[in-house]
Length: 262
Image (tube, rainbow, N blue to C red):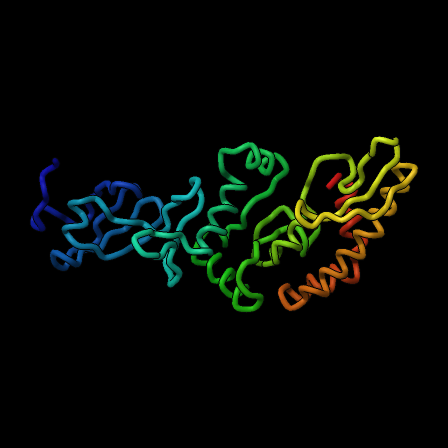
């Protein structure tokens, strides 16, 4: 165990290491519990106690602690809460870290995102900024939604408050990638093609066709209708701009994702 420092052993201008957030410099000493410091990497200043200096447990809220790029920031939004004896992450923190992991994590999916240039905007690298936007969306559209970067602006490659929307999961999965050349178009044992649209528990068939092209055309028609009907059903749960785009431009969405094989 390292020797515990006394207040008299500290001096303005000296630098010391913290346990997790890098080096800091002492810039003022006003008492044992009023020692002002500045972190070297971020410039964040705060007042700490001698006890915190001795334990090294000083936190820099601007130090990137999530996948080497996301930082918590200073604000009113917590990252966790207590549920009985368990500590749980808040919904905002879960959504924030998952987006950072998607773009910068060490997974195959994250590597694919990096390859096509998907990223999180600078503003949202700070958790407090993301959480403010996130809880405003919940207030407007209710709980249980997901953060989506693709639908408000087709082809968007950035997670940001300008490009993202908060949507029900059922809208999110309407355009989710699945296997096959054309989602919802499948061959049967008799050599014909059938159309099937929906999730695992709500999949519905829309006829059988002689050729794959006929089935794709039928799929397109049915999918456009599904997108419009779903937009109407959930119009109070989504951004009005997204509702307008989905309802009046459903064919644009269907054609875009058909071209991608989704």
